[in-house]
Length: 447
Image (tube, rainbow, N blue to C red):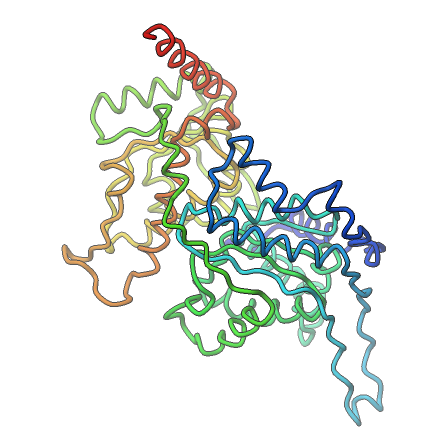
């Protein structure tokens, strides 16, 4: 239902993908000498360590060195032009046709491991260092929404017997010969059945893929319906991407704990008063609109309270009703700050609400939204992994527990002062910076 994207959104997707790709041969015309001027992932990593922006980590260094190898391979790689397939002739139908010649592209990288270990940071280092515009970095949730939108558009504008997947794969390849996916995961059959063919066709077109994931490819779509049909996709992923683990045992998001107070637990009258105070400060005491409507993609979302880019929702408004990625992404695009009140402790009985909560956090995180939240318990205790008062055994609910660990790691980072000062709410950023300055002054005054 959420994938029935409007014609307006379709046209944006299609315009972006069908622009003439006249620079295939110039995708990576830079020689290896460009390393001296542009630098690669290794050089950028060293610079960030020297500047104090990163802690030197042997596990991260090993991943960065592999990304640097791919970077140098791409510098000397010239992808052949993509040619539209010709309509089959009488003789080709009679005698058959040759399979299209495969493009020998550099092997990509599939980076997996625990939450907060630096997978996204290292991938982003690689992405920014590639000297080409024929590249794309996208969260996997958003990518799949786009793919389903393209399929829906294709089916409305072509004959029923025509296959949309090869055409969409060529469109994506024309726009971006290097694709970086953040948080690669497969949880439902609709995505699994599309991906098994789409990734194959993209690889045939010579697309180079780098992706992060919390799961090894062999664990993707675990226990999913008709998983055996998805296995060829896993095999091809492992063939086209080197699978490397980034498990240093350190969650760097949790190291950034100097919190500017935006998360409150447990829920009390004092907590509610604090939430009201933050909402007033974040919105600069602007006039509050009650029960406004956010209209997008032919649908609407009721916003209980909003003022100057700040929205206030109860947990039940967003996570116990039928909302999904498209709703949360639009919410994150429209508001720079979100107040989420009365988040309960969730059990396996509440797995649907927990899944929506995880998807909401992913959307807010990707858009760097400032989240102000009140909850029944501290972040690490919000999901129990219990069902009917008992611990779940086996693999039932394993996906939810695993995904919630990632959400917890992101929530920890989102309450840090660093997150708030670099966020989209100037008032809260200035307030957090002032708190930093006050802390320094207090330290100096005592020495």
